[in-house]
Image (cartoon, rainbow, N blue to C red; front, side, top):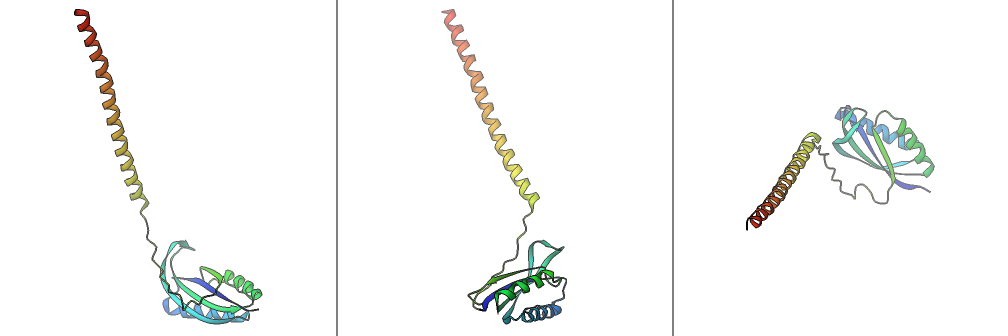
Length: 159
């Protein structure tokens, strides 16, 4: 029994934008080679990857909806894994079509780790400074208390 599947794959940014269409047709041909029928191919755009994959920082995201037998999906998966044309891929069973869904792919925001560490360090140092001031105040109060008691004793002895 044929089921509906969704394939999402990433084409490396080293491929020129005009050649992305060629890679898309290659992947579609690979899918149809194993008896599946491609319903829709949708290019989602060029995006910054969250981390480097095969020394690539950017990639073209492409979504494909196809119907196939479960046995042919395993063969498609194996062929995609071997393919040098794509960085990563994922096949999932799909009940809803990609064309019905709205994609809002958001660029990955890098965090400068050094700035974050410096900010945390300054915050910790400020807390330590406050703690030292409090302990100095307590020590001075403790030091003043015995001196005051000694003065009271001295006055009592004089009387």
